[in-house]
Image (tube, one colour):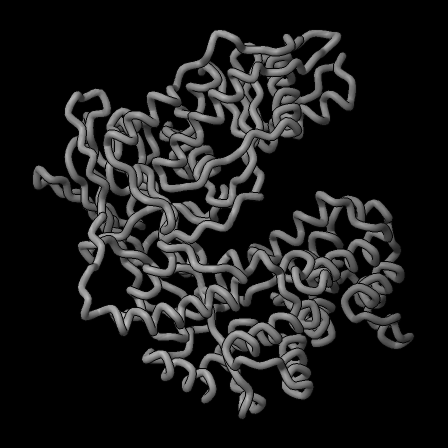
Length: 615
């Protein structure tokens, strides 16, 4: 939905965004992982793996578990927990991702899960309850197994490498274990182990925001061949802030791989690849395993990876609708070799003095975006990256600004509509919002206009064009508005007001289920709305046709009355109530009546008032 606003007139604008799609010093290749983390030399990687080997220490438990009645979760030793956390962090560092910390609470939940699996003697995320186990122990164990990577037959530290492989026929189509371990937002982990069953709690998303183009395994740059066998699948996860993953389709994708020996592999979507234990494979997974996309491919005829592999992924688009092909290189090396390079990829700074005056102006522009939009001074890598983008003309001021305003770091602030607009005024017009202008912008947002559309109104204003000109920057074009807008998910960091989406879900609990929401359910519904996995209609359907709602056994009359309250925001009128009940009595299904209510303009307006799409 694209709109033009009369109120744009003399209003101001602003822009902002996270770091751009990067290229290395050669200008040809992108790098995987965080844009603010330096690539490692071969010698550094070897030392890292020596410091954190895939070896389980002899001391397993601080307190011995029991998988027989009386059950006891026990406690893993500090040596084992340190070894498991260290190994995971070593692999994440090679992938270009920040370290995670070990959580005592998550350890306890995972340890209960390990004991439940040991008691059942079966590897599953959803174990049944042993007949002699008390409910509280089983409930905590089930929470552990259903929110963790699980493994059987590995040592506990070795299991971490096994989850990174993930290329057996039952896992290659999604690579879920690997993706959870390489989730950029993973902040805390917990581990459990008993009698051959290992758990790794990985659903946490408390990590610091990471700006990246894509996450690759094997990662770009130097990569030890010992971590990637010839039968393993490659994975490329695109940053959903930069790539339009909603429209990403397998049949549109092509991956071309060429090694330094001159051999080329081409894998295309839409062809029949069997997920067997070896041979060529290609697929796209958009399931919710950390980040909601993963391009998966395996090469045939490779016994051992050696030398440089150049990978090109074609068929993805950015949020502007532009082609967003990417090419990267992996240099495999033998970590057991005595001859290793201390050279790091892409260490080629620009020391041309002729570029300094222009760079200083552009640097001031980018610094201003960091300070006003993100509330901090720029990090060196991010500042240099954005200056290069603007200086090269690859993106204009509006596009760069968009990346700040719709970065994960900015989104985590969960600004309410009012504070979102106020920030745009301050950041890019250099003044506070006037009352009339602020009210106008808030009104259009509450009527269903997305934050992206409002951004365009500011970004294309005369005031912002003048601001860009002051810094010697081309303003560029308006951003292409995505199909769905950004939705805040938590309390506003400026005023503390809860995000509207919470009110939408809470309202459904109160009206449809006649109770306050439980924390887990509330969080789950908010998450699917914010990620645009479900629309307002989808969530409403989940409530009305839940077992809890159906268990109330409403009569046709009471069912219709509930729909009036939930989806029209009022009590039923006599004529309308009689008409709907007559339809139900004459054989119209409750699903059909439900569709009539959620398809109404009233429900559309209710959804818009909470900042979500009806669907």
